[in-house]
Image (tube, rainbow, N blue to C red; front, side):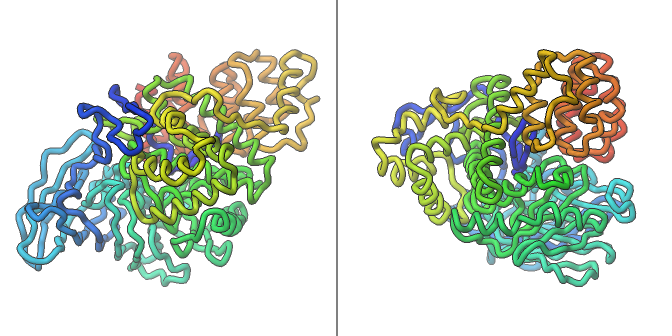
Length: 631
């Protein structure tokens, strides 16, 4: 899902990476082909975050017809579910819901009884529907709640244009159930068609077929012919306009930012072509971007055909476009081959982060690849230092936990580092050949860690017995931390930054004597992220006078500097800090600031003032993630 770059790396969904007290450990080097967990531990392949019953009755297609009501902040209409009966003895279809009003359920034109069970705190409520006597479809007439966890409603004042309202959905990990009654599990893949009815002056777009030349008439029809998991169903509605960036790529955005977005991301087509050469055909027809308002809680979301993107990466110099590479890479790892449960998230994010680095190297060169890899490794080191051992495991156990409540770089950067080690041992050409075959073999399937390991053992380990062994691989996936001897990225571009920082800290140089005219954004981030925890007021003033860091227009650099300012109580930066917190809803950028502010009484007061002002425009996930810091 989501991408990141600050301290730094790209993380595209940045969503899950913790585990409960019952972590899964391998019992032998044959874990890939065996049940690796004791019977009293996790059941491999079981989705503990869905109340549905796909093993008995599995939904295969959804027909949606929804009307968007901005005044009431609800969507209403129906979802007609086509299902396959897997168990001949099954008598009911069970789907996931959260805060939905179920008005009726019909089959073959007749109303049928249904039972909406008691809601779980974070899983929602199971909707049980008796199977009809004939046919394989049921139609659920329903309405969403204004508080739907997967939907954000923005007033005109909260948009770039200030004239029209805006709506967007965010379904990962388990929020699709808040706007569609469905089997909300990544192992249930569906095709879908949708009719979305909106005010005539607005345009609707979805993670499906979008016609850039569609008439703006308030009724929009969509088709997603490839089977996708529920968390990739997405909708955006607003004053959206389109600009092409290439034959298969373009950008949707509000008019005021459309040109800037298209210029910033104009290399998207080149990224797409480069990825196809490395890993096989792009299977989704078009690849477009939707630029959301700043309240979007993530860097990006890899909704197929239409990635949702934060405007915070429009820096004017393409310095943060690795986020686009990350979301594009998900078209292979994540969308085409998907984690079957949230325990297996690293199969999405680790592979995607590895592909991201390879795409960036191919399009922008090895120097940039090296710089971003070093920043990613440092971000991983920081998470390993701050997490308990069980939270450092790739195949994590999330039973009994809300997947929104845990986040780290483990599935992203540790997963990518594992693949980089494999690449170094078997050779890059062999690694690329394996990945192309892997994406082809499992295309449009959702798989578990165990299924991947069985395939990997048969097709890779068996081919390189002198270079790879399952004990080492199991250590990567089922043990905490980073294995000793793992690859350590290096960048020559950072040595001059280290020297400059060292000379400045020792007093040999004033900040204005540091030659930064050729520094990249990544060098600036490396410079700031590796500062000591404590700096003097004189040092902070020196940096700010020389480089005007408080007023930086690059959101990543501003984030790193503002974090330094809070840690050292550099008050000249506090007005910008307030403006930053109330104007950006991207959780990766605001949460560390709220967390640091909450450590002191004075800081908590600053945090509360900003949070109270910004809360109405924050996404529900950002509110939930930061509420505790201001209470």
